Image 1 (cartoon, rainbow, N blue to C red):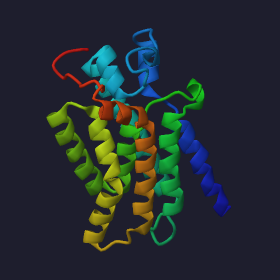
Image 2 (image 1 turned 180 degrees about the vertical axis):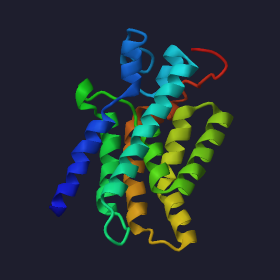
Image 3 (image 1 turned 180 degrees about the horizontal axis):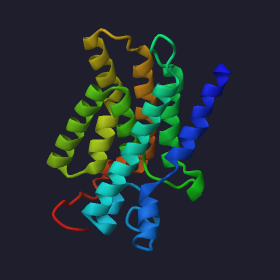
Image 4 (image 1 turned 120 degrees about the horizontal axis):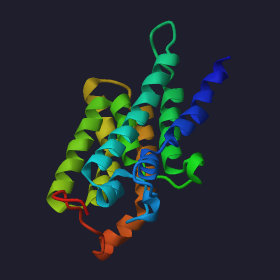
Length: 211
């Protein structure tokens, strides 16, 4: 019966595949956001294609599903001592992010996983996630490159996770390794953005009006 816990992983993948960018663009605007702008189904392309409210709805929806998977799996794997099974919980976190990036419902074409990863990290290690979010905001505010903020923040996930856990005197190995895996996934999904940043052809974001 113990191994039934690992059914959380495919369940998390299916939840991750509920892509709010695709759903909102198709059923509210009658268009597919993946056929517009950068072709990505995340909040940034929603901002460029449909404006701020749509982008916020997608961002918070994608973030919420990541946090919900972690919180639910933590609750359902708690033992009699009140300790959850972190191997199951962190695995579910990876699968919900992968489900968002490769959604089975939408021919495996989803978003880049940033908002979903943020939701996961907030539920796993809130302080570390808030530090990373602050870094992201500062980088984007200064440079106007959302992709640069995403990549830089992702690269710092393992270090920030380790530091916040170390300062609290908690074991850091598993969560830091989890953070490294999340970082690798997010950097991989931004590989084309990294090339454009290097070539100085990446588009900056404008927050003043709909693109």
